[in-house]
Length: 183
Image (cartoon, rainbow, N blue to C red; front, side, top):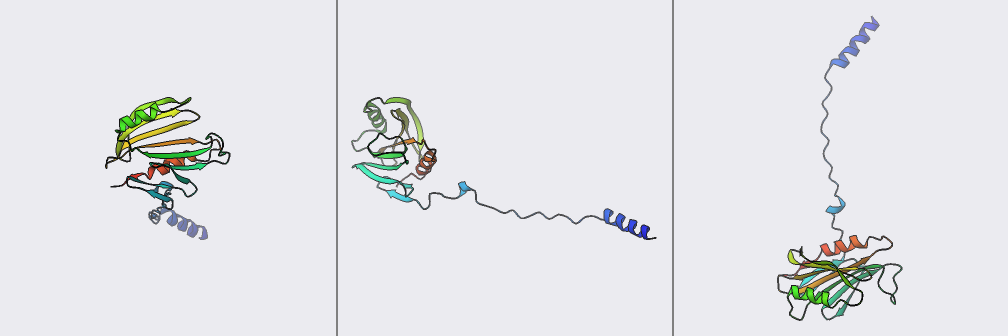
């Protein structure tokens, strides 16, 4: 009799419908790309543009119209050619040249062993059409020449040499992503 009761209980447990599984609520975790990693960076602004950069970068005005942002790697020395770090320069053309003529003048004034390694090609940067090219010397310096919506002609040049794989290119790309023309 006991065996019959246990067998019946087992049968009823197997044949009764199981309780439905309720869907679990979705939990949203921000991805690294959704977080603004530049929000706490320093900000530089002038009449033509604004840009953000990390606080461990130095900024200098090398000529009246040129602003330079740079970070040296641990092996870079002041008295040696640049070989470790990242340098970003923004040159506001003050001689009235068009963007095309400004690009030609940069290529024409390259000195020493520099050679053109990327021919001028059309690009769009910060919503503005321009020209990109690259010159090779000790490293490859890349250029973007633009004419801003307000008529300013400028070149943005950068050189990244990262022998220690410290992520300088990623940092440069983040800096460039913050570039905005002022209206």
